[in-house]
Length: 428
Image 1 (cartoon, rainbow, N blue to C red):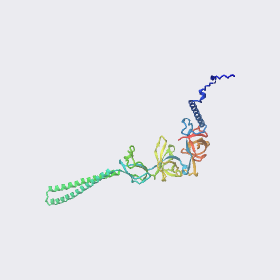
Image 2 (image 1 turned 30 degrees about the horizontal axis):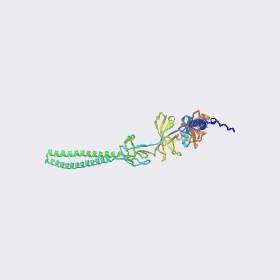
Image 3 (image 1 turned 180 degrees about the horizontal axis):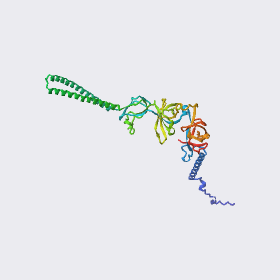
Image 4 (image 1 turned 45 degrees about the vertical axis):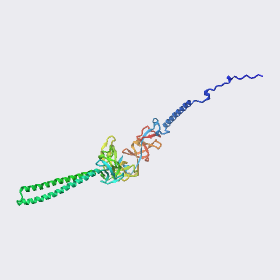
């Protein structure tokens, strides 16, 4: 029986290659991952830019790179609704409330604050003590000057007694001289003594007045350490505290405190506003006005033009005007923003029958005649062209007869490149 030959061991030997036993290396997989991330980032940025250009997304978030913020910036204003006489205003100006009398109050001498009697909102009368500076050293000096007065007065009283005695002696010597019982020289000696005592009385009287003047001077020094209200007003700002040192005349502002409080007469408020040079001819001293204060939206205050300041602002081309509010109430405070409507003189123009009128900034209106329109900004930050019918144009504002209802936001000085449904960004 034939036995089969054994298989060749070398023919059956197989060696597995390294790349067949393992997958890709770690470094290779890392390179592949980085490449995938770069590809995804490129696709994301490209897609965002494409979407932005198509108007699908808004580029208003701060995290968006500056390079892809391509939205057009615009300045907007609100369409206003005016009622009453303010709708007939010949000029409209904005400004801020201020007190007719307002002052920083400090002491007339340097010192450390010992006591403050007021807080913000405290109403003070003219002459009322607001604060007191430490003046113990001056009190001691005052006691010394008063003692000097007592001493001078005592010396004067003593001299009066001496004068009275000398006078009696002179009268007796005069009688003896008349009877020839006294020589001329003896009489002259007595008379000269009397005259000297009378002269010394004048010196002592002057010493008394000098001592009294020193008392008044020291008392005035103490008064200078007392801060009093110069007029009836309300404390609107407390600028120092007990223990702080102040200097007179505001000289302490650089190193600490120059005043204790700021007071203002809130019963007499006025609006400090700027009127364009082109319209200042319509503003007359004493003319009636209406004042709208942003903090009191449901109230219109009455006012009068108190003064037109005879000095222009070359850079801004405006004239400053002071308008006094005649019916101010407790809701008004200095530095509040306000709008002043300068009204025509009584009889100059009949009152309008309309209950309300709509006004728009003339710079927002494009076109002429029957083709006038505005670019209205919607809540989605897209602009839409709205046709309007405009009326009278006064002081940079145009009355809107049709097309707008009031409260809309419109683009001021719109660019001719704007188009319908364009996405924009509001300029601060």
